[in-house]
Image (cartoon, rainbow, N blue to C red; front, side, top):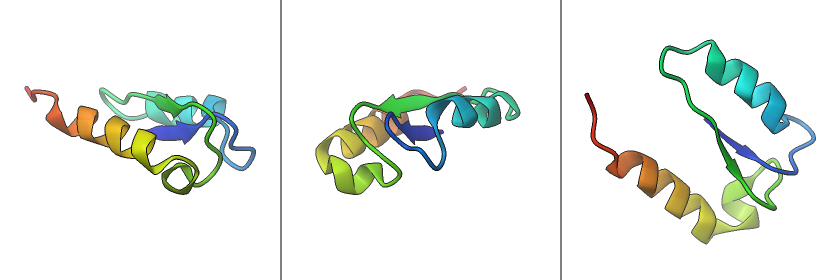
Length: 58
């Protein structure tokens, strides 16, 4: 799960709690981003998502 560092609606601590409920759940926090990280820093958002999708599975 991805959270914006400055998100007051769904803060990283809350997203971490949600990630812990999912088997193999993980949290990534986008620095300087709020509730819409893809708008706050699109390049950082794409990097985080692309890095996640490029990871080997299994």
